[in-house]
Amino acid sequence: MYLCTMVRDEELKTRWETLQQKLSKQFADGETLDLDAIIYLVGVQELGQLHRRFKKDHKLDLMHIAICKLLEPYGYYEFDYVDDDGWPHYKSLEKLPNLKAGEQSIMMKEALVAYFLEKNYIK
Image 1 (cartoon, rainbow, N blue to C red):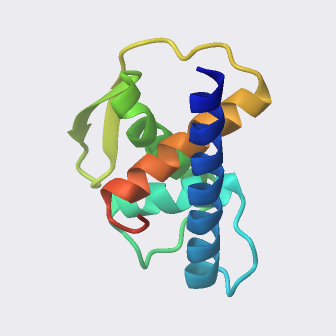
Image 2: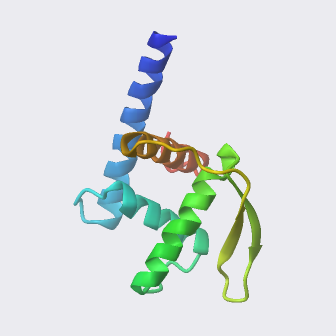
């Protein structure tokens, strides 16, 4: 069991670094994007308004969209509808677990890697 966890953790680390490098090169002129920036990019992708500039309050909404989308496969959220302005809405299905900051970070990295694997952005 322990060896399996170590292999999985190493695979996640490698895939996360690959994802981070690829997105940083594409969107930040090589400056390393952090976890929040990558979550934001997923929100923009999911909204589908790629060339629009967003105000600060919309940036938080975009991150919320991304988190809902990323945690949907884990059973925490379910897509509900798209409003008249084209913004997707999700309903909460299950309360998120109480995780320490490091555990939250790992969970989001796993979800991001899975998202970009599904989109064939990374392998």
